[in-house]
Image 1 (tube, rainbow, N blue to C red):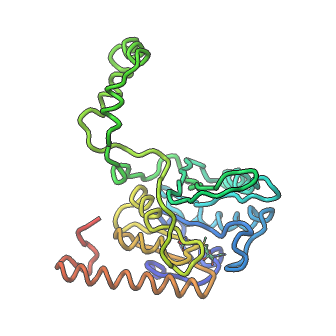
Image 2 (cartoon, rainbow, N blue to C red):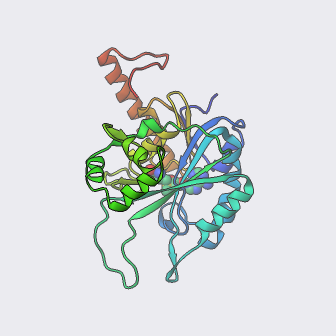
Image 3 (cartoon, rainbow, N blue to C red):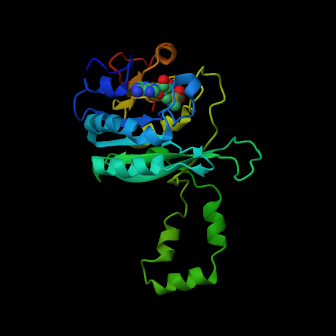
Amino acid sequence: MEYINQIIQGDCEEVLKQFPDDSIDLIFTSPPYADQRKSTYGGIKPDDYVDWFLPKAEQFLRVLKPTGTFILNIKERVVNGERHTYVIELILKMRKQGWLWTEEFMWHKKNSYPGKWPNRFRDSWERLLQFNKHKKFNMYQDAVMVPVGDWAQDRLANLSETDKIRDESRVGSGFGKNISNWLGRDMVYPNNVIHMATECGNRNHSAAFPVELPSWFIKLFTQRGDIVLDPFIGSGTTAVAAIELGRNYVGIDISDEYYYLSHERTSGIQMQLLEIKSERGTYNPNGTAQSG
Ligand SMILES: C[S@@+](CC[C@H](N)C(=O)[O-])C[C@H]1O[C@@H](n2cnc3c(N)ncnc32)[C@H](O)[C@@H]1O
């Protein structure tokens, strides 16, 4: 397919109309936030956000494979002293459109620095809403396992009397069994809070997210050779993550400037990988390289 491993300049709603149904494995994106970055790429008024987004979501729904996942990084802004409800309204409308709102991850921005506001604290997290077409979707949980750390030792050393009573009351299949599942294990499944610093490097884009963010979701929801789409690609971060993990990518951006920026960035990464692989002798032009 001609759009594979391309950055395309245009309005994603129009560009995607050329794409076949059921062809994308993962959509990972951070759209322009309502009204926020007017000076850089045009804000959408919070009251208009749902109407602006829904026709795009309709195309996302059409191009996503039945086994695929859509991750939407978004956060409602404060308008007139209260949180606007456009994200909540969007979720409700997307469910009517045919999406399942399967899960919500929280991105905790680890490097958030202190500040003082009269009626709230610093906002240091963003939503990553997960939508699917069907209840059964591809998910590769083992790919994002984390070291168990000291949790198991501490938890087992500090069993309360209540824990023990509850354990005894479930003969053979209760609490004791669950805890013992983790005995002797080095790796466990993570929870749905992702602790990552924001992008601090100069990417020439005011809203770039760190490459580790799409990487985590690409590992969780795709395998090598699958296709990852970012319809609001910005500086190309999702495409970079996809390339590094041996996945195919498609990026779309309406802005000429960001189209060129992401095009340049992805070409640079591809060149680097080719050089590394040819140095190691692991480069195989048929795309069956070793890592990942
Ligand atoms: C929040 S930024 C994405 C930043 C990106 N995640 C990164 O790491 O650089 C949103 C991007 O959407 C683009 N955009 C806005 N409206 C669009 C549309 N209708 N179709 C495609 N891209 C659009 C903007 O030009 C902007 O680069």
